[in-house]
Length: 254
Picture 1 (tube, helix red, strand yellow):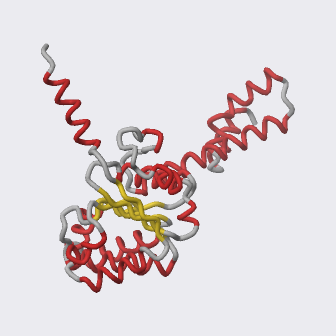
Picture 2 (cartoon, one colour; picture 1 turned 45 degrees about the vertical axis):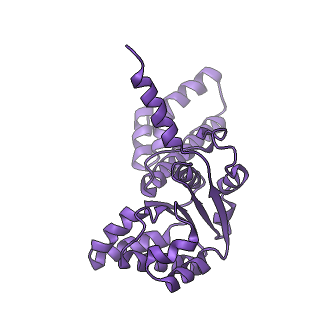
Picture 3 (cartoon, rainbow, N blue to C red; picture 1 turned 60 degrees about the horizontal axis):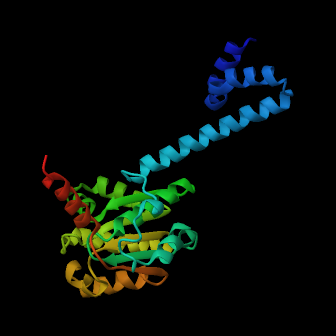
């Protein structure tokens, strides 16, 4: 059996990581006169690395994230009063392993979504199944979906290791269906000890008004905040800063 035959056999066995590096590893072994076991170990590591890479890519694709943000990308100097230590603590994902939650509340443009997405992305890298949703828009879609689609969505949102609801109450009031969905998500995930991260511009004291039901708001917050990190974001808007910078550039004389 020659090298091409071995490569074909590896692919039939679904060992594509080994197949793709086989030629290189063979040349490396011949050039360095490596022992067979060293070459085999290298090929096996290639296979493991390939599978890990594919699994990470799959988790990212299924997460709903549209970018791969990092905490190191964030300009912490712009708003020095932001809870830096608490953000990095979330990034350790200890709260996910404990089944705790995080509530990130504050003014628009202060970086809440960036932090939530960075935590979610880190979770995909660490092997967690993540579901990121822009809360108001996805809740609105849920409200007009049929029963089968609702059941499928609810199953996915409940089943993820980490659920991120970004910009909750962005439009202030949400529909009755959306309010019931939020209550079901918080209740079921609380029983399963699965973590939720919520970002919102709205203070929790006003949630009853946005839900249209003060009792429901109390029930949701009681479970959500039982084991919860509360992060408050205050300060200037990054988006306004960036918009001002773009305006300054376009206003410069040619």
